[in-house]
Length: 140
Image (tube, rainbow, N blue to C red; front, side, top):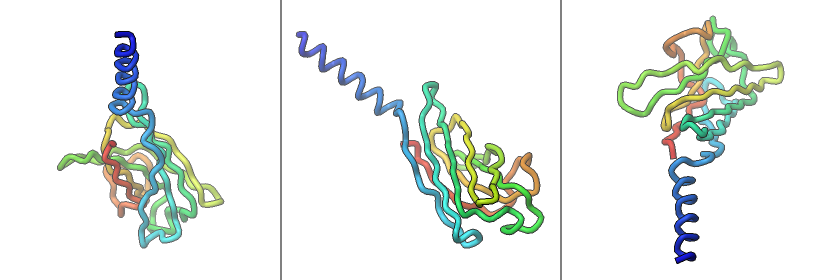
């Protein structure tokens, strides 16, 4: 009976990790013809309260006004996978003089599309430009 309880406890831990997951890992973002040299990666981690922590890093990303005239900032978006889901502005991604940038964001979504757009202002409520460095995360 003691051996069975030990295995039951181990099974509970394994199932908990599978269901709640400690980390989804690092995923490479897609490429675009508008920014052919740019590369991005997103580290995705499930938080204790069930949200998804996103740590985004990019390199070789040209300033936004070099990609789209009249823009000054990259905005990071997440959009749920269900049909008709609206994109949510997660904030600005600033690119430094070395053409690198990082940002962190949290979303309650477990599966989503993650992408950047070049925008005139970081407060936009709808993506107006091309989806840059797209990433599809199914939540698993």
